[in-house]
Image (tube, rainbow, N blue to C red; front, top):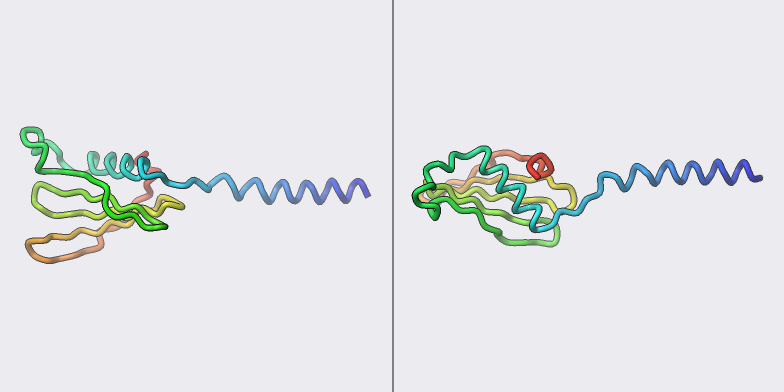
Length: 114
């Protein structure tokens, strides 16, 4: 009987170990930091050295499942980063107000930039 209990306990332990390791909830600060790091690595910020206000990054709307971080380029285009709070997957959508054009521009894993 003791062997059955030990075997059962081992199975429960093995099953529970893998389920908690990849579960990290994204905070608002993490979402902003990761998107900021991505934007600074992918976009040329040198044009904003003399006038930092022409390129901005700010928090947008928040839902129960996602944060939105908004990047505004010196061209006036906006990139909306929708960060999933549960897993860090981030969908990007570019909007050009002057032309009223929206495009999905890809996805990133926020954890690659934190």
